Length: 284
Ligand SMILES: *[C@@H]1O[C@H](CO)[C@@H](O)[C@H](O)[C@H]1NC(C)=O
Ligand SMILES: *[C@@H]1O[C@H](CO)[C@@H](O)[C@H](O)[C@H]1NC(C)=O
Ligand SMILES: *[C@@H]1O[C@H](CO)[C@@H](O)[C@H](O)[C@H]1NC(C)=O
Ligand SMILES: *[C@@H]1O[C@H](CO)[C@@H](O)[C@H](O)[C@H]1NC(C)=O
Ligand SMILES: *[C@@H]1O[C@H](CO)[C@@H](O)[C@H](O)[C@H]1NC(C)=O
Ligand SMILES: *[C@@H]1O[C@H](CO)[C@@H](O)[C@H](O)[C@H]1NC(C)=O
Ligand SMILES: *[C@@H]1O[C@H](CO)[C@@H](O)[C@H](O)[C@H]1NC(C)=O
Ligand SMILES: *[C@@H]1O[C@H](CO)[C@@H](O)[C@H](O)[C@H]1NC(C)=O
Ligand SMILES: *[C@@H]1O[C@H](CO)[C@@H](O)[C@H](O)[C@H]1NC(C)=O
Ligand SMILES: *[C@@H]1O[C@H](CO)[C@@H](O)[C@H](O)[C@H]1NC(C)=O
Image 1 (cartoon, rainbow, N blue to C red):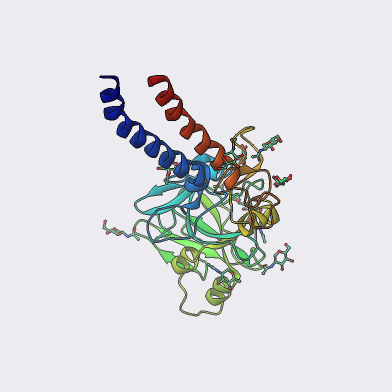
Image 2 (image 1 turned 60 degrees about the horizontal axis):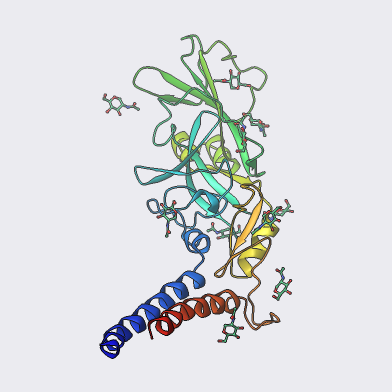
């Protein structure tokens, strides 16, 4: 009877220990922070959106506060000071910039949110390649400026530079909105080339991300993913395949213990192996 019990339990114990080893192995080889932050933001056709941005499929610890992205109609957008911006492109290879365009101006300048483009300088700064466009809405009929776009209800005047002497002043227009465009696009409009004001604004402008580029570059080079220190909920962490580190992954072949990932994995295997062996002895 005793022998029979052992015989029927033995395969079960083997299977149980085999399963637990596999589960623990996959856990220790893929730190959940590393796995989660390895995915780029999944929204529409704009690829390459990563740290410091988070949201949608990227957990909040994959980015920094203030850089939350939402996916609206398959377009990645973020809000800043009352205006929604769509992300057109992210460039991590050159100084960590992002090309954005005002979402309310997308496709038409006729019905925007009447709010100036104002940056939160703790998150973004301008790159020197931009020019402020000024758009004038609901102007007195006495005003005529050379640059005009006809909308259904009224006309919109726009200037690529500050007012020059001799121009009629549109200061009495009801709404005035400043929108940055690439200087090349502003120059094309000034030169009377085919660029329309809508195309110029939809072309967007570049913003420099206010993050420590070097810190993230070094983490990425070591095979990690940049993220938030989840212990303090602020500051930087480098998420690596085995665990989180303060700056870079510590699991290269030059490491003194012959591979950082092997240390936590071995101790887990020994623990799970030990449990069924102990049960077997007690049963006997
Ligand atoms: C990452 O985390 C987010 C938020 O918790 C979750 O929605 C998403 O499914 C996770 N993705 C992966 C690949 O684990
Ligand atoms: C600017 O961004 C920082 C970081 O997210 C935030 O704490 C601050 O409130 C923002 N400032 C404004 C004026 O929105
Ligand atoms: C990033 O910027 C560099 C230099 O301006 C450029 O060569 C590269 O194509 C850009 N990459 C992306 C994805 O925009
Ligand atoms: C990157 O930024 C540094 C310092 O702001 C600047 O000197 C350099 O020209 C920039 N590089 C590019 C390709 O924009
Ligand atoms: C935008 O800025 C201009 C110039 O500073 C100002 O005249 C205008 O009233 C501002 N518009 C809004 C909507 O705040
Ligand atoms: C453009 O306008 C913003 C305010 O909307 C201002 O902070 C910035 O200095 C202006 N830039 C130039 C080049 O005039
Ligand atoms: C003008 O009104 C028509 C019909 O309501 C609409 O289809 C069109 O998009 C409007 N155009 C602009 C520039 O708002
Ligand atoms: C998180 O921050 C604390 C306090 O600065 C630091 O001691 C710890 O090493 C950091 N952890 C990671 C994984 O970055
Ligand atoms: C990397 O691992 C080695 C060996 O475990 C250890 O001596 C060293 O302090 C670690 N370095 C960092 C930055 O964690
Ligand atoms: C786990 O087993 C390995 C050999 O397989 C051994 O080198 C290591 O010291 C053991 N670790 C623990 C915590 O028992």
